[in-house]
Image (cartoon, rainbow, N blue to C red; front, side, top):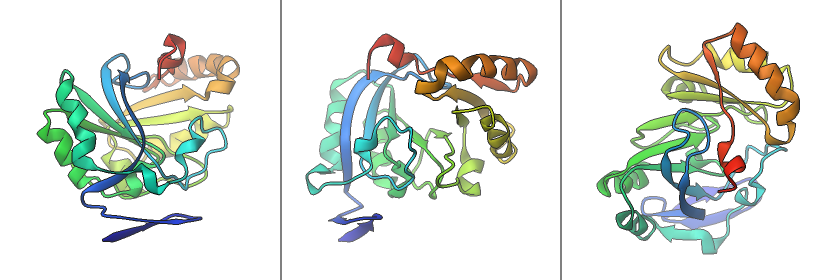
Length: 214
């Protein structure tokens, strides 16, 4: 039995075959490079990054009832058209995702991750989106693995803040700026002007919120 420790509690589970899951659902990827594609989301419970504007704060904690067998979790994939499976959170890189990725691939799906990059990424991923946060900085190995860098823009100073991480990713990494939802009307015009002056960046919008879906 392996033990995973969080800031305010400890949950015991077999990290090789079990994982804490807040929710899982089939929907449309609303953000970034794969925006618009059908995707199965697995939202893992547990996060110590603590973004004050996080829209899924319920994912920060872990309860014993959320621990499920990975094999049971993957069963639903076999009932759906094969595509991309997005592992998100919470902070999914807090966990060893080796077996989860293996199970996703065995089901014939591609395994994607959305992470802050604050922890080493363990598992065979087909796409890695790193979205750095100010409250717990990303580590360089995670940045170097990124296929996509997604910087959330809360105010104008975030452009320079995001630039320092863009300098640490690979030349092939796609660069995205995305407005924090509550600040979208304020920062989106600033983002448009910034991308026009810095065309290596792209604008990402949370299109799933406009579509009214998860």
